[in-house]
Length: 115
Length: 112
Image 1 (tube, one colour):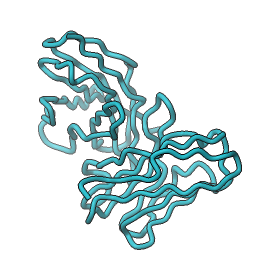
Image 2 (cartoon, chains in turn red, brown; image 1 turned 90 degrees about the vertical axis):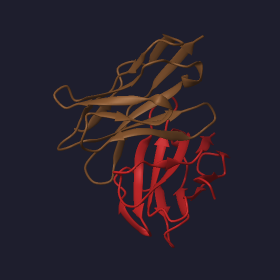
Image 3 (cartoon, chains in turn yellow, red; image 1 turned 60 degrees about the vertical axis):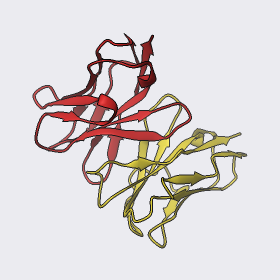
Image 4 (cartoon, helix red, strand yellow; image 1 turned 135 degrees about the vertical axis):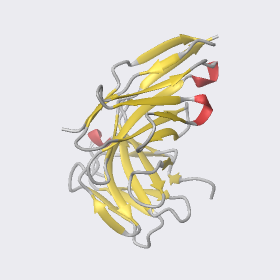
């Protein structure tokens, strides 16, 4: 693919439901980031993968948030027992070759609304 | 604490005039600095970065930014604004480890 893709683009969940958000990074990109962007704010770091290894998960707001990248390509962000405060746009970005020194390529985001 | 500040929520400029979008930062050690732009209904796009070297860096679409270590600033500039430059601009800094911290964003309006 030409860029980072995310699915679904929009997700409405009832409070208490589990959701799974998918990210397909640019082929060959080693680094993958997840961010949470609240309305009117900048993206906030959630977690970072280098290949399949989750090297930094310091930004995950609670143990209800879980991310994986089992084969070092596609990544899934899972939110269990969603709460209203989880409503936000979730952004995925990939980068090459390592770390955050180089520019990140962002997907269009998944807008999550918890009702 | 490491942080990025964009002191202006909105910047208005007339087409053809120079524009500046301000950014200041606070990090430990040497900063890696970035500017991203977000157009309506589109993802964030990379504009430019400062890693090391010349304090003036040039990026996409005629934008440039000046790194000022003493003032801990990384202001985004363009000599002549276009209406199509109207968008939301984010300054970002690489903090310790792999975390990138973004500012809250500045909305740029360029009037014809």
